[in-house]
Length: 324
Image (cartoon, rainbow, N blue to C red; front, side, top):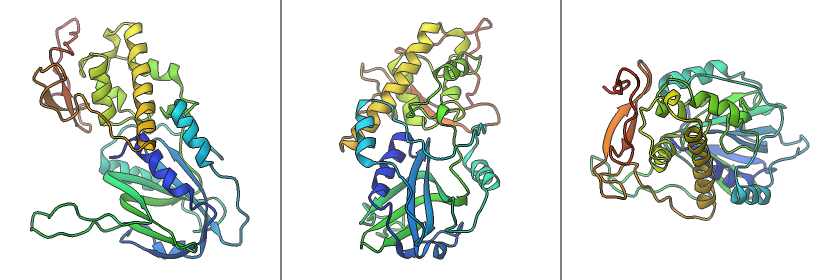
C-alpha cells in the first residue's frame, strides 16, 4: 500500500480544492453513501501516517484554516514536516493484516452526520491506491482476459470550479476527527525519537518493529527493505543484539530516507531502489527473499543480501524466527 511519502503527495492534490463545494459525486464505494457528499464544502485536508483525512461541512458554513501548500512543499524540501492540525487523539493499535485492519478501522470510527461540523472522511489506500486530480487513470495493459479496462474509481468528487478528484483502491469511512498520534508519524516534526529507539532495542526482529505503526506510522515495506540494506542489518536481527550506535544510525537513515523520498515525489522524480524486488544487490551479490512477520501475524515480502547484511545470532544461535 502507499507509504507516508505517497500519501502526502496525494494530499497536495487535494489542497487546491479546499474551500470548494462538491457539485456532483460518483464512484463505486459501498462503504459510504457517496451522495451524502453532494453540496458539501471541502474544508480541510490532513495526512497522518498512511491515512488521509478530508473534512466536509455544509456549504453555508464558514471556511476554517487549512494546510498551506507552499508551506508543505517548503517543509518537505528541508526535512520531516508536520501536517498536524486540529484536535488529535492518541491511538496505539497493533499492526494487523488488511482484513483485520479494516474491521478495526470501522469499529474505531465514530460516524457523525455527513457534512456536520467535525465530519471527516478517512481514506486508507490499498496496495495500488492513488488519487488523481482532473484526470482519470487509464489502463496501461490488458487484463488476464485480454480486455483493456480502465480502473474503476471508488469515489469521484466534481467541484463547482469544474475540477475533480478521483480516488482509487481505497477504503473510507466517516469519523468525527482525525484519529492519529503525530509522535509516531516518521514525517512529522513531532515524531518521538526516544520512543522509536525504545521499540527498536527490544528482542523482536528489527524488520517487525520497523513496520509497527504504533512507533513508525507511515513507514512501509519499501522503506523497511531499503533502509535495512543501507545500514547493512539483517532483517531478522533482534534489536536487543545491536549496539546503541547502530540503532541510532538505523533510525537516522529511516527518517532521512523517508524525507528524501517525499522530496523526490514533490519534484516528480522516481525512487532509485537498491534491494527491494531486486535479484542482485548493487555489489552484484545474489539477493534472498522471504515472507517475514511475527508468528500468527502478517507476513511481508523481504529482500536482503546475505553478504552485505550478515546475520547477527542470539546466544542460542537462532535466526529462524518468522521464516516459514
